[in-house]
Image (cartoon, rainbow, N blue to C red):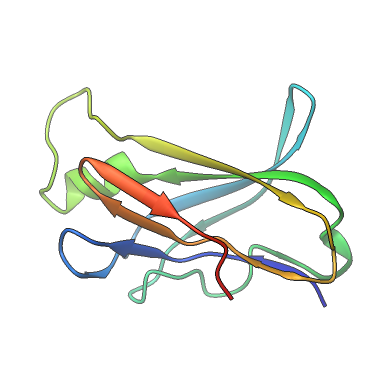
Length: 117
C-alpha cells in the first residue's frame, strides 16, 4: 500500500522538531488542492501517514512546512521577516504503491530533504 510520510529534525538543536504544522497539497498545473494538514508530535513525526492507500495517486504533490512558526516558538528566530518561514517541497509520485517519506532537516538559516524510507 502506498503512502506519504514525513518527519522534521531540528539540526541546530540536535533533536526532533515538535509542533511543526505541515500541509500536503496535490498539484495540477497552477492548481493546489490541500489534502492533509498535521502537526508534528514529540518525535517530530505525524501520528499517521499524510496520505495512503487508494488516495495516493500518480502525480505531483507539495509539502509546506511552517518552519518560521517553529523557529520563533523555539527561540531560534525573531522578527517579522525570517530567512526561512514556510518551506515548500514539491515531489513527484511515479508509483502509487511506493512509500514516499520526505523528511525535512531545518535550522534558522538552512534546510535539506531527501527521499527516506
